[in-house]
Amino acid sequence: MNGRIPKKLSEFDIYIKTVTAFIQGASGTSTNGERLGLTTTEIGLVAGILALWFTGNPATPGAYEKHTNPTTKNKATRLAVLNIIKNFKLLFTPYLTRMSGSANITTNDRLMLNIAPPVTTRRTPQSKISDDIYPLIKATGGGNISIMCRTEHDASRGSLAKDSDGVEVGWAIGAPPATAKDAPNKERFSKSKFAIEAGLDNIGKKIFIYVRWINSKHPDIAGDWSIQYSIMIT
Image (cartoon, rainbow, N blue to C red; front, side, top):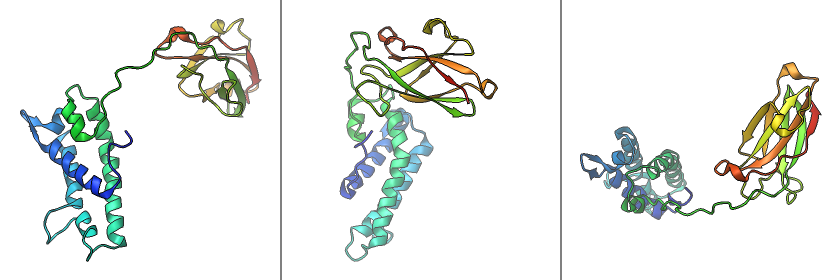
């Protein structure tokens, strides 16, 4: 996403004019914007921001025209153009994301909108995740348990193992399960730091926890379960 919308004023001027004309342009019985998933209202909002930026009419100049005119350029005009760029990015960035995922998008569309081509090749993990998992487990009150997992390569901060995109947790309250597979509760998290909600009714009881690295797209390469950890719920 970064880099699609230029930051430099002169480059942004070209970009907003180009993309506005493009999404308004005819494409069969609709417009390019509609073909790529935008509504007529959304296309109108983009055109409205362009009208604030540039009018082409010396009698009623837009913010960019005022800022590039030496006789009217000042701190206020600079603030105005920067605010327009900020507002345009907030509006148009989600539109770019939607259009980039359209089944109708073409190479020319990507060129006109400054959308990079999709990544077609990704490395597929070939073997099981071998990194050991080290969890830091804390009872944080209110029946909640905070867990931060790391590899042996990161001694003080949370981190995911190579080829892992998350952590699976197996846990039980009251009685320790014989193995991780026997844990009645299983949850998956996409980050190395997360929390388990054990519940207020379990305060004062022990919770028994296992963790392991996982890959959601390749479940067969999940790492081994950790040893069993336990802590009092507070």
